[in-house]
Structure formats: C-alpha cells, structure tokens
Image (cartoon, rainbow, N blue to C red; front, side, top):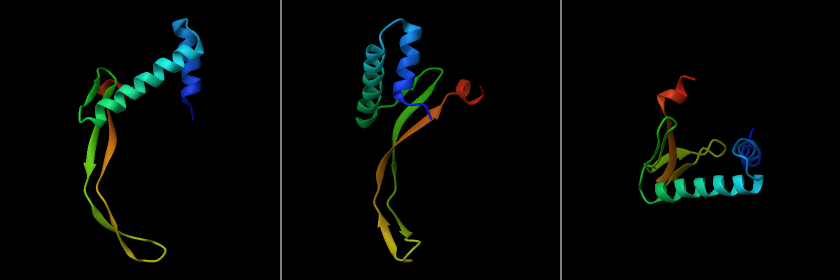
Length: 89
C-alpha cells in the first residue's frame, strides 16, 4: 500500500520542491475535498473522477455472533466515482 508520505516523495521529485512542501500541498488538497463534500458539494476532478457524499438509509441487521437484530443508523458516506479515463487504463 502507498501512503501520503510515499506520494509526497514522488511528487516532490517531479515538482522540484521539498517533500515537506509537497506533503503540505497534498494535505491541503485532501482537506479541501473533504470540506466541500461535507458541505454538500460534489468535487469533479476532470479526467480523474467525482467525490461526493451520499446518505445511506437506516436499516436493521443481525449480529452474526448473537443473532440479535440491531439497528444501524443512517450515515453519510464519501463516495468516489472514477472517470471513464481512469476506469479503462
């Protein structure tokens, strides 16, 4: 698995900036995506994909160990839909 540290190393080499600067820019970029999706907006990165929040319905499920029925509340999930350019690489 590749983490933000490895990505910032690669970006810093390609962009000719320090790893710390690349890490900061990537972190701010991710924060902006979350801030916008949390406020109900869709974030469309052309050629890459769309980030958006979707509400899941509340539902009932069964605990596999105890077989007890439990209520699962509704929640907002962060969803990413890749662009067709990304899907068929």
